[in-house]
Figure (cartoon, each protein chain N blue to C red):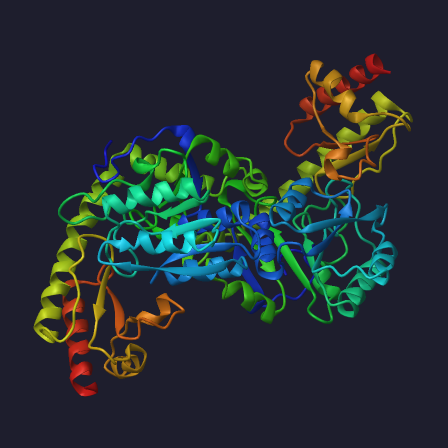
Length: 315
Length: 315
C-alpha cells in the first residue's frame, strides 16, 4: 500500500523470496516444465530470459506484439491450432525491449486463455514501479481469477542489483511449490543476508524514497533522450516515448540493418543492442534498443548526438 | 595455500562464484543434462541433492558404498552393462551421511572411468576443510587428468550459510560454460554483495581463523558424541568415528527400523534423520544419521542420553 504502482492485494503466504527475477524464473522452469516442453514469449522479448529457457531445453515460440503488447488473438490462434504451452512468458508493463504495456482487455483475455488451455503465465513485472507520470495498469495478479499468474519481481531494478534479491507473487498453492522445492530446502532461502538488509531498508522507508527518486530521475532522463532523438533524427526514425521502464525502441526505415550500423556507432564511441538480438525470427533488423537509466544527462546528450553523427555517416 | 586441506593448485580462471554448492549443482544440471538423462549417486547420498536431480527430471541410479566410499567397481559394472550417465555425483570427503572418504585408488579409478565412458564427475567437496586430525586426501581435481571433475565448494560450511556464496572449481573450459550461461549473464553474478564481504573476510585472515576454530570445535564435539554413544549404546550399535565433516552414521542390529524408532525418540525430545531418507532403495532402515556441529557439549550429551533412553524403552 506504500506503492501506488503495485495496486494489488498481497498476503505474506503468497510471497516467496528469490535471488532476483531471473533466478525465480530459472527455478520455475525447473519446477513447471521438462526438456522439450513448449513455451510462448513475446516477439521481441528479453533476450536473456529466452536463453535461460533454451538452456532448459524448452521449445520457445514467439507471439507477435504491437503498441498494446502481446497480440493475444495471435496467441489464441496458435492455441486453437493445437499448440500446448506449459507457460507463457510475458513482460506486461514497460516491456523489454519495446517499452509498451499490455492493454487491459488483453490482460483479461490472456488470463481467460490460461485457464481455458491450462497453462501458467510467467509475468515478469520488474518495471511495475518504474512509471513516469501515472501508475500503470495493475500487475496480472489483479486479473487472475484462477491462479494462473506467477509474478516475478526484483529489488535489482528498484534498489540494488548486487543484493541479488527478488520475489515471486502467486497463489498460495503455487508459492508452496517453490517453498517446498529441494533447492529452497537446501539453502533455507536464496539470500538471507540480502533479504534482511532489504527488510530494514523497507522498514526505514528508504525503498519508497528510492523508488520516488528513480521515477523522477529516470523520467527526466527519458524525456531528455526523447528531446535529443527528435533533434538528431527528426522524423527519419519512429518511436514512442516510454511511460516508464528503461528503454527506447527505435524503428529505422525499411531495409535498415541495425547490426551493420552498430560497428559505425562503435567507431563513434556509442553502442546499443540491435533489434534482432531480442528475437530469433530476424524480423527486427530495423530496430534498436536504447537505455537511459544508467547515464547522466550530459552522457545521454552526447550518446544520442554520436548516434546521429554515425547515422549521417552511414546513410 | 593458506588451507592445507585444499592441497590442489587453483587458478583464478578455474573458479566461478555461486550462491552455494546446491545452486551451483542446480545450474550444472541445467547446463549439462536434459530431462530423462541418467545420473549416478552414492547410496546413501545427500537426500536434498537427489531431490534437486529429480526436479530436473533426471533418472537417478545409486551406486553401492562401503567404508572407502563409492564402490567404483560397482560403477564399472553398471557402465559395462551399457548404462550411460551424464554425470556421477559424489561426496568424496567426509560423505553425507556416512562420514567416510573415497580412497585414493578409487579416486583414480573413478577419473579413468569418467574419461573412458565420457561423463562428468560432480564432486560435492563442501566438507574438504572440516577435518579433525590430519588433512584428508586432496579434492578430485588433483586426480583429474582429463578435466572431468567439477568441484562444488561452499562458504556455508566454513563461514556463514546466510551469505549464500560458494564456488565451482573446474577446468577453464568448463568454467566458461558457467560464466557464459544466460542466468549468470542476467544477474552479472550470483551474489555480488556476499562475495565482496567474503573477499574482505579472506583478506583479513578471518576465514583461516574461522576454519581453524571450526576444526577444533567440531573435533571436540565429535569426540564427545563418540564418548556419549559408547556410554549409552556400548556394542549394540556400530559406527566409525568421523575423521571430519558433520555426521555420525549409526548402524543398528538387523531388523531394526529407524523410522519407527523416530517417534519414540521424538517423545523423548531428541531427533535424527533416518537412514532411508538418504536413498530410495530402502536398504538403510537400520541406519540413522546424527550431527554434532550445531550443538553445545551439554546438548550433545543430553541428546545422546535421550537417544539411549528411547532405545532402552523401544527394544
